[in-house]
Length: 114
Image 1 (cartoon, helix red, strand yellow):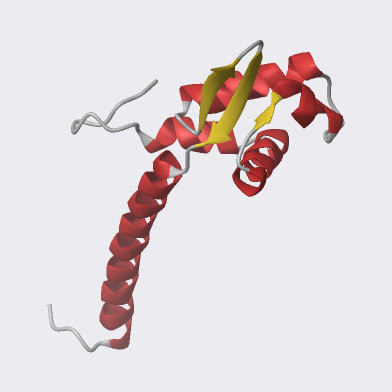
Image 2 (image 1 turned 180 degrees about the vertical axis):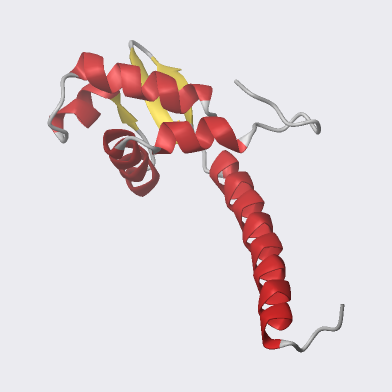
């Protein structure tokens, strides 16, 4: 797990976790349904329960899911806070690039003096 200087989860782990379409689907199901077991997730996906467990481990390392034991079952719930932090980081990048591109545009159009 990678951390930023402020101690927050780095966006790298979140982006790696979301790079896989099955993990995105698992996170979508968990967010929509409020939680599920690996067995119930496997029933709605084209993969085995063991494969679901591996995907859940990746999502857990990224901080995107939380496991909670309920008797003999382990229920997983989505935690979208790391996703929101990653979105804010991406928004900052967008702002920086838009500023740079506008500066290049101004130079190309001759509206900015050197």
